[in-house]
Image (cartoon, rainbow over all chains, first blue to last red; front, top):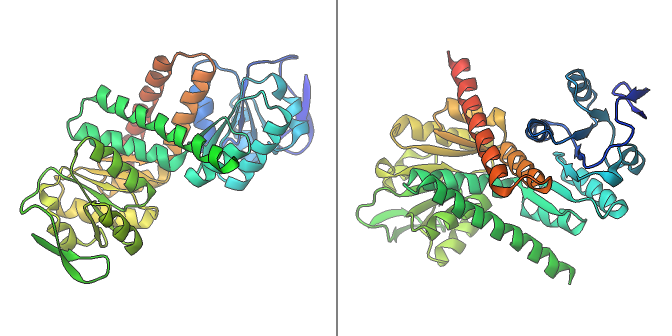
Length: 186
Length: 186
């Protein structure tokens, strides 16, 4: 049993297993975090979420989610949810600067934990990579790719071919992001 | 030859074919529009872009793109680029309210032209559907899906299986958006 701050600010016992490993920590449980939690949960990937909005914590706790109140940039809090044995850490927060702080803190303390980060755009993505994010997903790129796929299909490109073209492009964009940061750091 | 306003505000001849059809009109040529233009161009899908930033228009015109200065909510401008025979219309603008205006105008005048729209989030998406958008791509949903896919793969789910799971979820989200608007309109 681990003691964490509950949504109401008091300390409370939470039903974490005595030892957990391979879990995914989701930092931020707004719309993005909730969808990730739902997709992973459907595949029985164990998740723990941290969220600073007490209403959200209360609502999802009530539904049985492993969600805790707290700032994901606090190393002591991350330690309590066994981040050193986590399979992945995902930042989903709206605020670009908050995401950067969290990525920096996690990468500095637990460089072996892969960090997946939501980014606003390419510029934000390069900041997150520079702070240690393993993979970044810029919203503007994803929207562009998905719109392109839909228009290609509408223009008569078969579904599978369109998806393949988009996947190739997505990978090229990821490489470009990595290279772009590599150059800056060199 | 069609006369359109050039980037400098003067009228100028542009090298549109005398009659075009099946082209994709891209409203807004920022980062999102540029990527869509690039993906479609690589597949030789003919595109015409409208953009209100004169620097962007000048830069891409210089590179040979079919890009014109102008507000995509102006029906007279859209008529000049043969929207009635376009294969698709895509809104990519940052501003939610601008996107809604454009979708409304295009759908009212040319209801047979499919409209693909970038949306900020689910709430914005429902507004765009209500105004006539055929397919909407909410940035937050796309980022969530892509992050989920990456984490699933990281957790050991094979690539193809992860992509399939995400595609099924994407379609469910699209149906939910349509139903959500259908209910509101009923």
